[in-house]
Length: 213
Image (cartoon, rainbow, N blue to C red):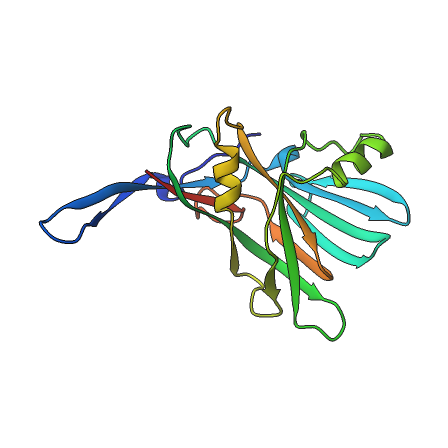
């Protein structure tokens, strides 16, 4: 099921005063978009030559990113609707916020480095053939982003951001994509990301924040 929410149930504009003469700059609109969940979020695991899929609506409602060896790896996939972002928007900043459920670094390390790619993929299906799972697992990236660290134990039950400005600009370039889709890969160790949105607390799932005018 598609889940697009605005945190606090609002889209709000921040107007910054210009310098001199009381002029004002453009109104910056800040929109928070919750990941779509269900089959649009999830993870694909390669273990001993066999692929498997878990979607975010399956217990424990997380997206896992893990790397133990070249034959033991899990890649996470997230989808954010861009329907609320005008095609002619001037994107100023975009940030993805990940609510961290668990972090398990490799032996001797205190953190896990995650690498986000902008990709395109269909809704995940655990009934896919092995060939289809492999194809989506290894789908070519549109854009690569620098890695960022998730710390143990500090980031457990915390929210970790990473910059997605270039990806949103690319996705919103005409003809604009309907969604921004991100694949997350681990440089070594495991990170589990909460992905079950709680409308009452407005927490529990990844959020894309887009700032534009």
